[in-house]
Image: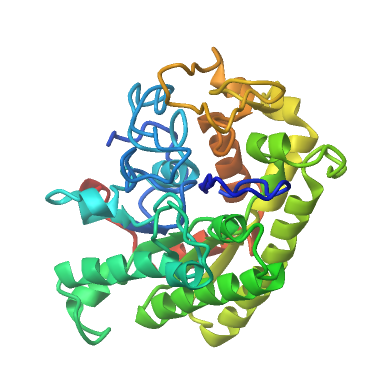
Length: 386
């Protein structure tokens, strides 16, 4: 999730809210899938964005201390280390997903990541048409779908779904749609466009992408909901102090993402009826994150709101002096922090969220249902090919 920063003059505009190595983690469900295709925004982007192409305000992802915890150098992930999708790949005994824009050779053998920072659910043209075009990444989830189609063509899948090349691209593939939609609300702040319109258009766009994938042959799909974006340091530092919910986060923003997730879940339920042969999982990012915020020490966190990498009080965040700038340092123990740079999360938090989604019951239906269905097929990947 990426926030676009703008020079909007309205007093109460909160700027804009949102917004390869070998696996070493425990392989929890080995050899059930041989590839993952991922979509989303900066919470899922494993390198499609570089500093020069990233949204204004967080254009330093190619610089240290990004990547410092696990990779020990920047991999253009918006964190100090791995993301949820990285832990998903590791738990399935698969390599980290290569970013689509920088594929090399046989990189795509085990999947591709199409997620890109700053991405919206609604087409970019909508924001241009409504004079909301900011200095942001112009990609939407529709763009990512176009990239996916181009990728399929490189695999020889150009026509009927029954072609062997298409079957090979979809068989034994997990489709992971990371959270996407918070940027849509961010980019429309201060405009006359109703929140309800953004929600309807955003959910409809994601639903359309899912319908396309399911019609093409996707059988195993996970769709993440939006997180409680009101708990991010950026949101906390810009919102009025009286706009707080019962866990101390920005109440209006958390309610916004909560309502969005209700609409998204209703859409997914409709898709289940249309595609009974597929397993469609809702990953409840909102409640997983919120559970951590309610009892952070249970998950090893000491700091709920402050960013690990940043400057300024009270949340170690300044919109004009952000992580990755030469003058900005990071905390000594990122694993004790939930927030990494004020907008994105630490590797430690992503790991906790992954565990809660995959093993902790924060998916509907349970992720184990998807795994059981896959096992029931009677075909798993040859371990020697992984």
